Amino acid sequence: MNRPVATTKNNQQNSNIYSQQSTFKIMLLGDSGVGKTCLLVRFRDDTFLSGSFIATVGIDFRNKNIVINNKQVKLQIYDTAGQERFRSIVHSYYRDAHALLLLYDISSIISFNHVRDWLSEIKEYAQTDVIIMLVANKVDKTNERVVTREMGENLAKEYEIPYVETSAKTGLNIEFCFKAVSQALLEQTDLAASHTQTASKILNNLVQLNNRPAKQSACCLHS
Ligand SMILES: Nc1nc2c(ncn2[C@@H]2O[C@H](COP(=O)(O)OP(=O)(O)O)[C@@H](O)[C@H]2O)c(=O)[nH]1
Ligand SMILES: [Mg+2]
Image (tube, rainbow, N blue to C red; front, side, top):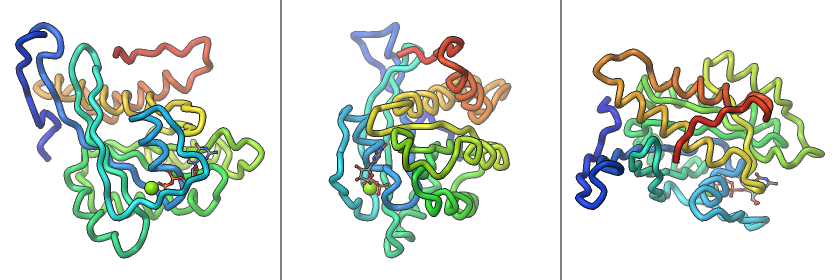
C-alpha cells in the first residue's frame, strides 16, 4: 500500500513549521447507531447531535486539518453507513484507508458482538498494514452500560488492537483518537526509511499512555 505521504505541499509563509502536509484517510466503522456520525461531528465541530438520529447514507466524508509535531496533517474522515445495500460501496473505500476506528456502543451488547464480524470484514477488504482502533463509545451512559471495560479490553487484546473509551456526548477521548492515529501514521512515515516501528506499535504506545490513570497520563500529542 502507498503509505500516507499522499500530499506534500510547500508553504512559503511558514517554511519551518507546517512545511509539509500529509493526508491520512480514516474510516469510521461499526453498527448503525453506535455514534460514528456524532464522533465525527464532535471532532470536527465540537458539538453533539443529541437525540437527532441522522442516518448516514452510503458513505460521507469530512476533512479536518490538524497540526501534529509541528506538521500540518489533513484528515479525510469517512463516515460509513451500516445499511446492507451500501455495503459494496463501503467495501471499495477500505483499500485506501490508512486507519480504521471501529466503534461499538457500550449500552448495546449486539453492537459489541458484531465487532468480530467487522474485524472479519476488515481482514477481507482493508490493507494488511491498516491501523485499527477499537472504540467503546457512549461511556457517559453509565447506568445503561452492558459491555464492561474488561470485555472490551479482552477483545482488543485478542485481536492485538488498542482499546479506547469515548463519549461523543461529553467529548471524552474524541480528539485523542484522531490525534493518536495521526501521530502514529506520521511517525511511521518519518521512520519509513528505517522501518524501526510500525504505526500499530506507535499507536499502541500512545493508547497505553492515555489509558493510564489521570495522574500519570503523559499526553505526548503536540498540536
Ligand atoms: N449518550 C450518548 N449518546 C450518543 C453518543 N454518541 C452518539 N449518541 C447518540 O446515538 C444515536 C446514534 O448516533 P449516530 O452518530 O447517528 O450513530 P451512527 O449510526 O453510528 O452514525 C444518536 O441519537 C446520538 O445522539 C454518546 O457518546 N453518548
Ligand atoms: Mg451515521
